Image (cartoon, rainbow, N blue to C red; front, side, top):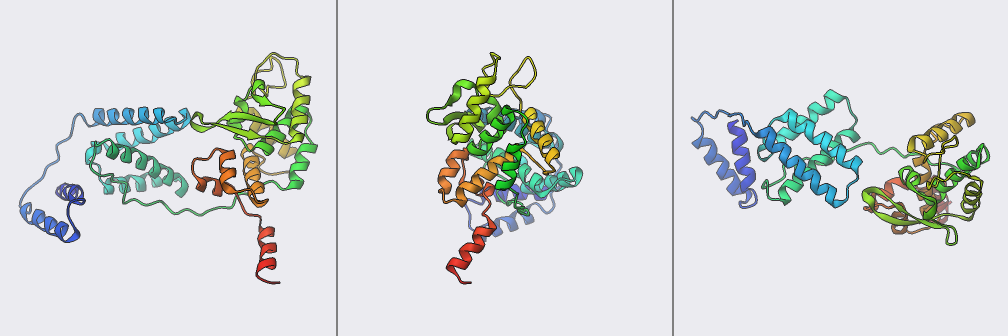
Length: 329
């Protein structure tokens, strides 16, 4: 406990002192407190105070436009953390966080990607506390991004895309595949679309992405033809762009799209047919054909260009051809 207090004092003074002065301060504190016994007194209000900070943080993120799903994830991670650590946020140190992350990883047997997601939530929370002057310095600053193995995720080849389209048993499923592959939208954005959102004249529509951010996306002529045919054949009054095949023809949900694609993939012997793979394929093809990555970023609705680059996988055959062209045979 004594060392923790000394560390907190050093952390608070770090912005005011240079390294030599910090070392002198530590030496003085160590010698002054050598015969002092420090006993930690449990803070009865720590849980209540922590929950107050958590609710204020969630409220600020809600105002910033975070989706309900993101807010729920933040609250779950932070509520579990604050309950288990049982220390007032103002007194939480870097060592406390490192210990918790280590125990969290062992307890849940989670991947490095998952544990880094938890670290990012902590970083957001404590940076907010620092910005709001509830704490002097975020204890997450010295916890760096956890290195993970980057797996190159596959995209659909043109042959696979054609196979999927040719084997759709109804015009709705074909329209869904066309729409996902030509627009690159998220499946959650797809199922929220209404018929009135579609501008067939300009082959475009407005979607609301993460955090209710609005953006315009575009589709090709093939998608237009199949989508018009699908809508012409419908006899229901539902406003949704895509509905269930069976009565009462309610709005299609995310699970419905995923199940349809999974069944189609199994029937054709194609592994891991998932709606998000169409998005990745569109991004990869666009960049591969020379579309500026900044424009692809805008189409996909990414805030950071780094996210777009993670989606876009450079075609290895094109790398080989470029090498032969520019470097040598």
